[in-house]
Image (tube, rainbow, N blue to C red; front, side):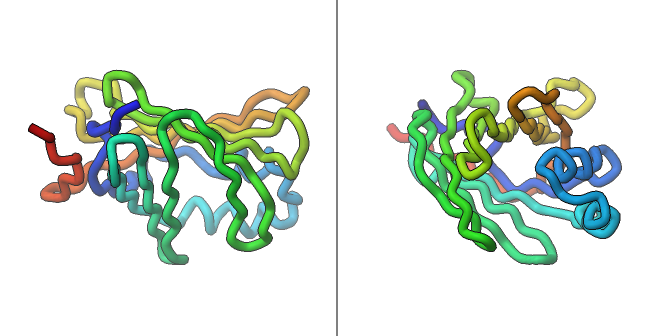
Length: 171
């Protein structure tokens, strides 16, 4: 699968359009007492995404906030790779795929430490709304849990001018 070149670039979060991260935190089992502290902080934290394709078969997403920077590199062929969380070293399986037209990518994270059926999906694609003029990235987070409804939320990012990270075209 090739690089989703339409989403390559630097993207600044549009806080006005973003949904709260609280349902995701609750769905992951965060105690309500901690949610009262963590949710306002998570929702107030602004992030910038830097999306590029180091080669035609992988994508790198760098998420930068005031708390630091997190880089995720994943192959786009659907192959799962074992990873560990930074803080607590929990194991998860990460895989990725690109839309055939290059307009987006999906990262799948199987939460193996939580048991069978737990996974998250991060879908990133260009907004289909014509008023966004192809300059808005939608980041949809979906949490899937066995025997419970999915939790889904969207965050929105505006493309930064002058920051084209599309791969060079080979001749």
